[in-house]
Length: 365
Image 1: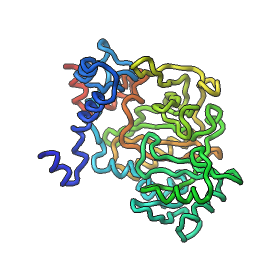
Image 2: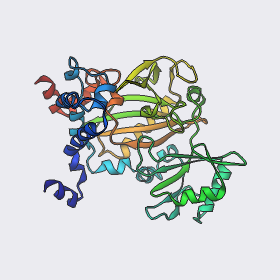
Image 3: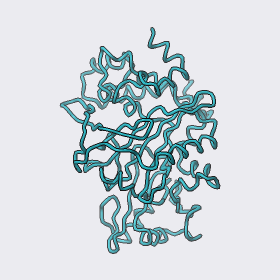
């Protein structure tokens, strides 16, 4: 009855207490561990995936921010979470401000019924699918992505090499490309961002996005965690860690050293530390280009949306030395912020204690 009332009210952010139950249920359906092992992990407050990837064990689990604790505080941004996660909404929020230059060009959108509409950066007012084809020929590359997609879901990289069209490296005729577009629903067609040379050397075929995670205490913002992800042969056109990408943590000054990959050992997925990219053999160390511009962009957005309390900015540093906000996330995955140890034991991670006394209390119990 309570669940039905929440759905009818439209206040879906109140469903947070059901999120962890759904995650636990998925573990029983999908993971390969014995049900008793799964139960013991759940009893300690973790999903099987978080437990394994973060290398939590029965001796150290009390020092970690657990899956259950993390789920209970979300959505931290309440009603505004939906707005933050919507790429179109973020584009409109910054439109007409100094931050507008930090957003990729948005050319067209396809709604839930398959209708095509021109957006603010379209080069013409007409909107037929052949216009997108002509735009692709003009630009060479386009990004085609879900308005509210996450973890690389529903992302397509369209390329025209002068003769052939490719969508996620699959060749298409012009007719097939138009047919593909007609099948898309709730998509944005935007500028494709090319990575900065300092980032492309690790992997040239993906944008190599950096997540900059911040939290708010009173009127003060602070960095909680920062990491950059590089693509690999396994990831295709995206660079997601869970698909085989490389994740490197970035410190407060923009430097990174060493990284993590996901490995499979028998029935168990786990993270492994590496110092060299598995495919390009580049040593995983360096500094994020245009770091000061990144910090400025974060500061400017926070002024536009002071209601937000927890934001995960996805930045791309482009080939022409520009800082672009690819999207903003209201819920960063827990495993991505604790593979190198408990977030609660870091200076930046003290934000969780100051913002949520219940977390500090549960660690002392």
